[in-house]
Amino acid sequence: MRMDVAIVGAGPSGLCLARALAGIGLSVALVEAQPREVLRQAPFDGREIALTHASRRILQSLGIWRHLDPAAIAPMRQARIVDGHASFALDIRPEQGQASALGWLVSNHAIRQAAYEEVHAHGGIGLFDAARVLSVQRSQDQVDLQLDTGEHLHARLLVAADSRFSEVRRMLGVGAQQCDFGKTMLVCRMQHAQPHGQVALEWFCHGRTVALLPLPGAQSSVVLTLRPQQAQALLAMGDAEFGEAVTGLCEGRLGAMQPVGTRHAYPLVATYAHRFAGERFALVGDAAVGMHPVTAHGFNFGLQGQARLAAELKAALAHGADPGRIAPLQAYARAHRRATWPLYQATNAIAKLYTDDRRPAQWLRQAALRVAQGLPPLRRAIAAHLTQRAEVMPRPMRS
Image (cartoon, rainbow, N blue to C red; front, side):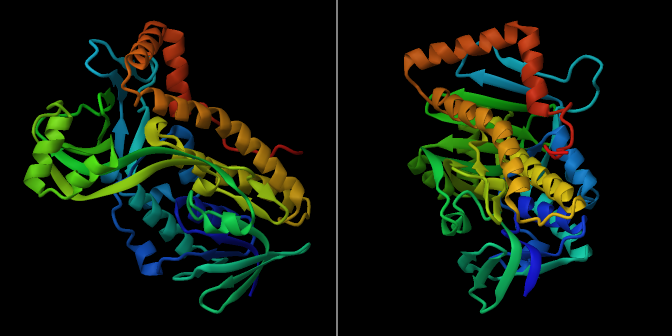
């Protein structure tokens, strides 16, 4: 089967890119290892996504935002960062006169389901579900994919969007820088006795990091960064024991807690591909950049990366160019690297500093929070960077 673009991976980035490219007249094949029923009714995976203003605009432009249940969208009015038991905190709020939220929390599975609904309703996208790529062969004019279903796809452009541990990236011969933090992220929804006030809390404490993300009603998503053995012990507990343990780890900040739904654990490994594009291929989403969650930018980078690639391909198509030729792909790669590399490095440095329990590291991070809190221009700059309120929609780098 022949098409313009083959996208491997139907996570949010892959689905959004499929919708964007079909919208500019390209024929698209979407290859996904999971069956389509899992895409249609995406299961809860514990992850709550902090969407920036820029990411919300992208979802709206693709028609995906309208598929989300408004009652399941939680605005964040304030973010607070605390180190240990320090008597001060870095507070981030919207600037004076800006009534809007810092961002919005939406479940990852809800975004994926909404993106699938929009893709399913749009023509020009073929879904090859319950299928894995066995081999990739590139030639001057096309990319040939062999699937384990026996099908063969021939595309002018191949896009890998199949996770930070991308199999397709490896088949293409592209390596990646990896940073294994040696920790596990445990995520779950918790019901709590005290109101959260729509305030997101990031709390760096001895031996653990705790994030409390405000959800609708009296619920929060609890994100615990722990040693793997600690995480496994918590996963093995019954609900009552688990609730007491998490209440203790949070030191009662939101009162007594009880779990709501399932618990999930993920290894904390950051990745950064050595190349984002080459002749007839590109990487998007976590296949390109897999972030540590401490700055909450991983999903946003993936969403904005696919928008950059779509903008470059749209410009190339307007000039009658082949979507798989190297110029637009290199332009995408340069733009995405400039947008992600500084924060990727800064995020890794922050994650290491704020999980270092040695005394000098504690002094350094407390001093950093004091400086940021005491300098309003710096605090506003941090808020602007985290919210991406002024970020414009990606445009092609070339005329």
